[in-house]
Length: 468
Image (cartoon, rainbow, N blue to C red):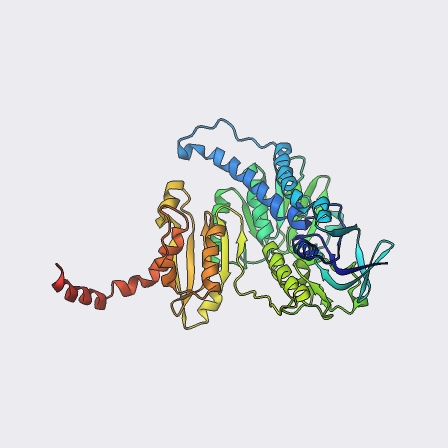
């Protein structure tokens, strides 16, 4: 039996933040991870490899369109072995920050294996029991596999398989047009695969603004991606051919099938009932201080089922540290968290949705198109726009699609968080030409009508009498 101040279950983004800070503050920390490597799903099967793959796809696409920029390129063939090497090198470089050696050096004791609760104050890892004053559950999530007829007899891929394929798929079928589905669709289409994207909802990226979805759809059509809307009835496989049968009888066949319908929290092996921790298929129930139904047991990251983003997991980990270690009653605020999809063009949103704005009489929406932005013109990246939701002269929400939208959104997130007036954005000098000017140009639209109103014109005419 080993005794600790803090026991962290899960070596992903959230768990590593808590373990690192707690250990460096001098607490005795146990870090439990069932996989051999630390870093979690984001590092090995999610954020990092997917963005590396998208980068390779972007280069391939740019090479094929080099003539648009006056450059002649003879070939843009994809070598999946070299693409995989590029991905692996990116993961390996970041892995150095999440190595066992580094965490042992700062004072963490690491246990490799699956953990489960024996009671509210004890967990077991293999044959070892760990007792702790405080527990942090950060076991993340995994791909959700729906109960579709025939799925158990079909060989399919998940996000854990997409970054080590030995050969480029000839025809890749993708179930689900959420963030994972659309990113993988564009990546493999631009690398050279034929791609069919299948979505039950009426549009891709259904949680984003409708106009963003439509703009991305047009880009996908330009990329040669087939988008099919319908309900999957069953799956079947004959030799190496996978077939998706829709409930209206349509059949779609390909040599690879990716299931990207959603994710579910990893809770089944934890035996949470033995610790008295409330949970459901949606995740572990937590309050705004990230406490579970047992006050000394905290949870953060995807396992809570609340906004499954790495940056949210890290923010939640900070709330855990404040409450569990420093006894500061810090609370999690989900109102100002940006969401980004890293397609090309990128999609980003933060704050009040456009649907909410439609129901709020005090809210208005202003829009500025990328085609009017000088930097976008110089780069030939004029597809997209920025919409700002404004309430009483202050930014309440932002929705963008365009080149570097995932970077542009953060200035607007800060404006929402600090309840800034639009005038603060327009008063800030933005370098020319830059993509960040999009924010200032959009904000300026809000004042355009009042600036050039009949009253303003009459005032200027009056004042002009005293011009030198």
